[in-house]
Length: 201
Image (cartoon, rainbow, N blue to C red):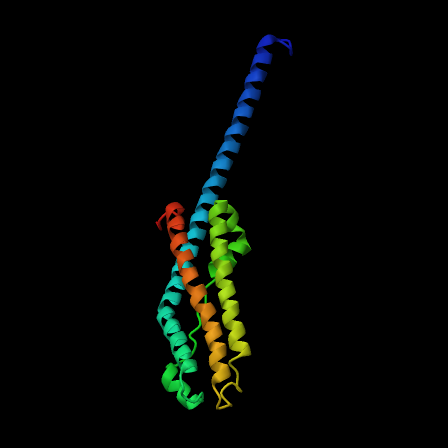
C-alpha cells in the first residue's frame, strides 16, 4: 500500500491542479470570446438601425429644402413689396401650402438608450451619432414651438398678415440654417457608420 505522501501521488495531484487551471482558463477565454462576439453583433445591429433611420431623416429634409427656401424668399418679397399686407395678397404672392415641418424618426436612438447599446460603439462614433440626434431634436423643438405659439385658430382671424409673415420669415431663417447643417452632419456620419458596420447577412 502506497504512502499518501508518495512522490507519485504529488505529481498526479499537481497534474490534476494544472488540468483544472487550464480548463478554467479556457472556459474564461471562451466566455470572453462569446461576450465579444455578442457585443459585435449588437453593435452592428445598432449601427444598421441608426443608418436606416438617419437615411430616412436625410430624405425627409431633402424633400423639403426647396420648398423652405422658396417660401422664405416669397415671404421676404411679400414684406418688401408695396402690396397691401393682407391675407388676400399674402397667399398669391407667397404660395403658402403649410410649413411642411420635418418629423424626425428617433426609434433607433430611443432603443439604443433603453438597451445601452451605445456602449458597444467606439466613443467617437457614439459621440457623432449623439451629436446628430441632438441637432435633430433642436430643430424639432423649434418647429413644435413655432407651430404651437404662432399658428393657432386666431392666426388667420386678422386681415393684416404682416405679423404672421415676419414671424414665418424669422422661423424660416433658422430652419434654412439648421437643415443644411444637419445634411452636412448626415453626410459626415454615414460613411463612418458604413466603415465599421457589417453588411446585412
